[in-house]
Length: 61
Image 1: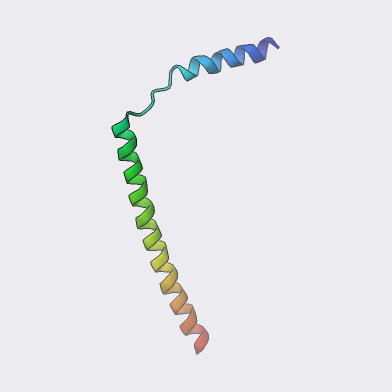
Image 2 (image 1 turned 90 degrees about the vertical axis):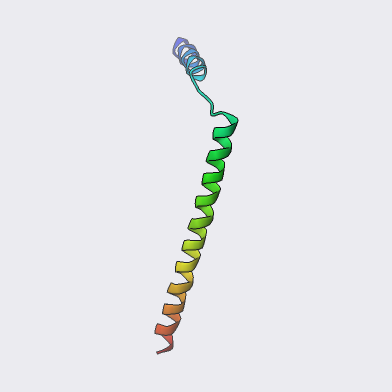
């Protein structure tokens, strides 16, 4: 029981050490994540279309 209480006290102490991002940092990070997600979706969709087209041409021979 003492180990559990010690663990919880350590967790509480670590929580107070957390530095949360500011609103501006959070908004900037969110914009970057959205942009990268959109770019990767476009790249992967394009690759899928090209590879699908190549496979269809190979099958039609």
